Image (cartoon, rainbow, N blue to C red; front, top):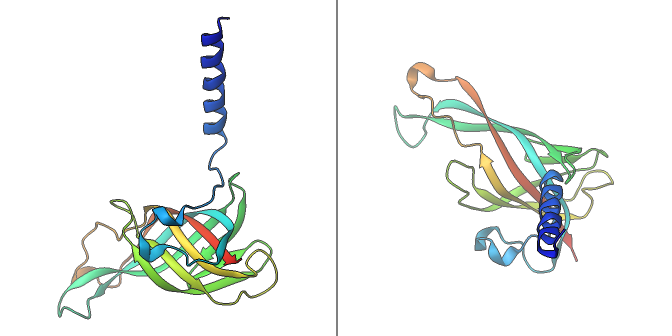
Length: 180
């Protein structure tokens, strides 16, 4: 096989192998992210995961507009996966991230930045001290990145549908940081 053809064949095989491997764990380039969701200096990535699940919304009267209704966030529920798409934990209302080892962390949203069209925003959360010992021990910040979907339903929401609930699918990377 000529050298050029052999080189092309090897590169093609490598691309197929990389594509088949699924998500790849990589450090997040915080400098390339919108300022509000950048993790402060002095913290390093501790754990990366992909969250796949759904967000529940309810049709509710808007407090800021008499007689107006809108879809309101109720709660998320997602499974967290590692780079090999092995389940390593879950994410649910609180917000709470719970590892398969039983350790968990909650937090307070500090900032958001727009995600891609049709997707929930990127997010930066400051973590509370972890409960239990394990993967979540020492987590100081959590980022939600690479969001896909999760926005409120497009179905009508009015007085006749008040109280109705709908779920929408979403996916996001959850990146956990600890102090250096």
